Length: 142
Ligand SMILES: [Zn+2]
Image 1 (cartoon, rainbow, N blue to C red):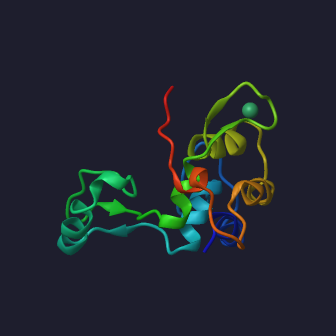
Image 2 (cartoon, rainbow, N blue to C red):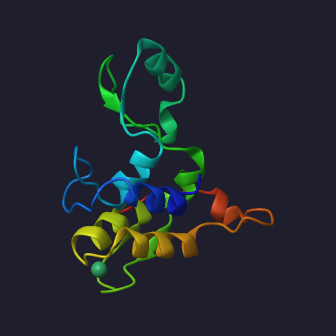
């Protein structure tokens, strides 16, 4: 599932929250996307072994212990979340999409549907082969 689709779907599950990734009652845009894929779950020893083998790709926060809540970022979201952008509203903030989504949600109070529309413009198109730029996740340097 595309990130923009997951944000839209998750937005139908809970009201929008601000300044918090996810709570029992509210989600921000990223939290909504996580919710759409089933939310956080508790790590098992098998998860840790498997993720430990590929910990360098940034899909989960490590270290992870048995019982820790975690969410495995889908591979198709990684390239999009790693794109460097400038805030489309204030043009004052630059960063990767992963940091700009909370900025749009919390600072500019965009609805999650607005954020999903914006993310959709950034996402690679369905057809055609990805360009090298789309395949490469750029490192964020502050
Ligand atoms: Zn801004």
